[in-house]
Length: 433
Image 1 (cartoon, helix red, strand yellow):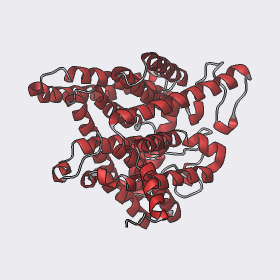
Image 2: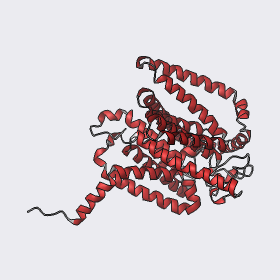
Image 3: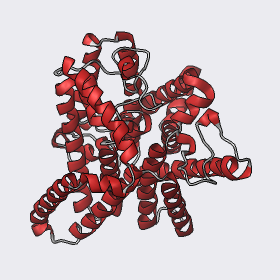
Image 4: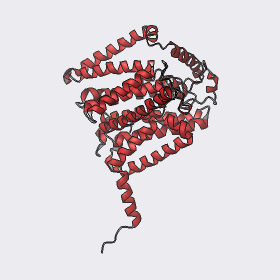
């Protein structure tokens, strides 16, 4: 006589079925993107402890979901070695950090978003990731513009809890629920890439896609962010280049890739030589002056620990040395280096900087090759989003924290699983691509 399984075993099987279901993975991925994107607003509303509680809950759910789907993922091609190397170096920086406790907390915070990003890349295919990002971005952009209308036009006031100045009725830029115009502008650029991908892949209704693009464009214009405008121009140029490359016969594509590299290098040199005129054209001289002051101070302090850096801290803590030395620049206390590359160099030294640049380079190269080779237009999304993050990192450090880092990890892991030498060693079924 067959004995029925113990009750605890039945409960485990039911829990595993729920945690491993595609529906649960979809909801969890969307919730993760939403929390990462709204982290500033959540921190302002429920505090640091509340945000950490939500993130830890997500990590527990992610761990359970991954365990339930263990057999369906090719683990030997799990994470790019370059990403593992960068994460390991941030951990090692705790050893020599000048602010050990803060570094330990910051490294764990970075690890949380790394794990969440890896999960999304492993259990969702690319079009599903685009849909998750698109749904969340539509929501946050509507909320942002709605609050700006209420504060700027209806009540003519500010909303200090979310750092919304209520500028919609004036000529000043808006901030949305992200606390700064540059952050809002960068989000709008990534949203436009996402909405355009949805339109081209017909993954949502055409009317919704067009409406979303109009919304993203409106937010981008109202943000008045020179950084976002410049990034958007780069994305438009890259999109045109991809469009042309995808129509070149495969036998001649490598040649045109090198031509494109040469063209980009030439444009970069011309842009550098014309930097004063470009800054004036974008009316960004005030922001540039502020950033130059921060960068000069950072460079002087960075020379003290040139090779290994001061230790990882992520967003700056103005109560901890050496960040106390930056003081108050023109009424603004820096919360970052406003340059992800200099931030990494300052916190992780030359070694960390080289690992970071290699990580970005490999991730973008893989995603670009996929975008130019694969027939589906959805493969252009990781390449263009990575490019937006890489370009914006020259004037902001948002790539290194929360939504920026989560998005980078998603694109990095997704591209690596498609173009990794370790795939040849993997005999298990590959995750959806």
